[in-house]
Image (cartoon, rainbow, N blue to C red):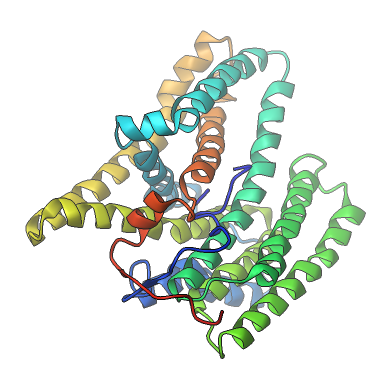
Length: 366
């Protein structure tokens, strides 16, 4: 996870800072490979090969709990980042206070109007759909930027243009997909088909970018970086097969993100533990428990009973719009906060994210 949404973490500025040495991973090499996109590719490719058109495999109840255990914690982890302490809140006033206040005011107005006019709700859902597309491809670029940085050879300008800007172009496919299925009920076949064929352009651009990178660095290519980029194309193939696959794609996206706030928390906890393993384990256990508890409350309380009361107070039929607005608020606010928080060019972000590695010499591959 995260601006317009910027990547999570965002690209390093030019010239980039010295990359880290030592352990060249966020968690460990195997976890990084699976979380960055390897696991979702291993699951989605065979699923696509079966030719199955209905990808809503699990019951809604099971899906809700999977979302509670994977998807919602990635939102809560980003909230932990922005609301960590007063200094962080003051530093990111717009992300911590300004944007949520604006969203809440708009949501109350939209729910109130929804008794007779759904256009205000639809407008916010449209913003969410477009923002989500930018968020997915932005996060993928963030994975590429981070893992090539960790490998000691950040991408050069041409490689960044091919990979990063190719992903930005790919955003247009998801926006078209969203409008095609959620607003016109499949009534934009020509535009949707054209954008699907056009996706070969960012695919080719990215492959060329990675080829140039590999050539420049003497055959070196960080696997998590490539898989994070490739995973987006696989996710979109799944979405093209069945719109219900958005559930699976969102959880794959959440897993891709979770390693980063976990590493930040682990690095901070390591410093606070002062070398005592028991303190470190306790702090990380409390962090994980807090994320899960907040996720359960959000999924089981806010969209249900609490929002029914809000809906009734605003003259809305219980469960019709208010619960939907809770997740819309969470999504849009998350997209914005991630774009603010994850900037690799920021020394504080680098210190938090790469605190477990040693400074290195100049990047390889020039």
